[in-house]
Length: 280
Image (cartoon, rainbow, N blue to C red):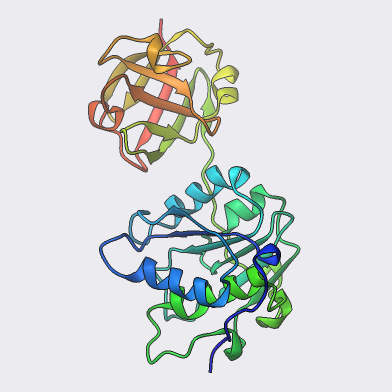
């Protein structure tokens, strides 16, 4: 039969934030919205990002981690699920921030950790909390959206969705740390935004450890190519077409080009190694 539409008033419904790698070319995002609207009509749905590259768990996880502190407490529905239809679990977790719903493939782990960790995790197995389907390829519609809606509307408690899963059995997603050695810091490009700005996993503290200060020129090594770039506060501190290092809105070291694309000009894509050192 599947879950019944909610009759809970809007004032009792939690907001739902929705992230996926579905893109916008097909009906998938709209269908999930439809399920949420039927089962939790009082919930506001915030589309965080549906252009995560296909199956890129780390990109989805990082997007949630960057955003979570600015989102209203409620339910995070995240679907980047290359293992859909396999024996990976579908999980829901309760945290100090609210609920997280998604596949057990590491996608949820960094953001859950960011908000203080999970107090309880369950495997979504209750057939009454699922939409019956002839196939197993659209768990965003059939499993995750109903669970998120039931939690948001208050029509189900976490334990109603299925059995408890011990935390040590949940799949983690390990995010690499920068390597600080001697006078250099080596990290990698984590994210390239729409403007071609490149976020790294290097923090300002990492640069401080090797004696690199704000305002200083740095040597940026990408592959065998060296670039001289200054650490500044904002894009306006350099001239048009000039590269810069700055601390981005997530507090990490990023590379940009004023009026251009650091990704293109410095040949930096996601996962590419980058080394920073003080320039003599």
